[in-house]
Amino acid sequence: MRPYETLFIVKPDLSVEDATKVFESFKELIKKNGGNILHEEAWGKKTLAYKIQKFSEGYYFLLNFEAEPNFPKELERRFRINENVIRFIVVKIDGKKFKLRNKPAQEEKEETKTEETTQETAEE
Image (cartoon, rainbow, N blue to C red; front, side, top):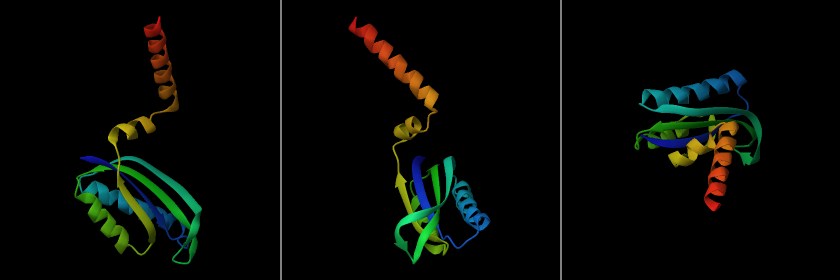
């Protein structure tokens, strides 16, 4: 299984509950197709950089997941079919970079200190 990231925007004329239902339906789709949700974020209603389908706002949702290599095509097909999704992107991500990016800040600080200490010891 490979790690992927998708960001999609849902129409702003939906209620928060309906937009969340769309988000949940895509999470279920990933799980039903053997995928694994790694990270999820609901960013809420944001202003778009430019109008899309005459909308200047939209509900943003981010999902990081693992899936088989053929699944992103099916996910993109479902995004296109769903009339509530106004924009989407699905990208394959480097698993190592994803793990580093999502570590808690405290762990990253401790790792940096350990690396600095190791470098100082090596210089002496």
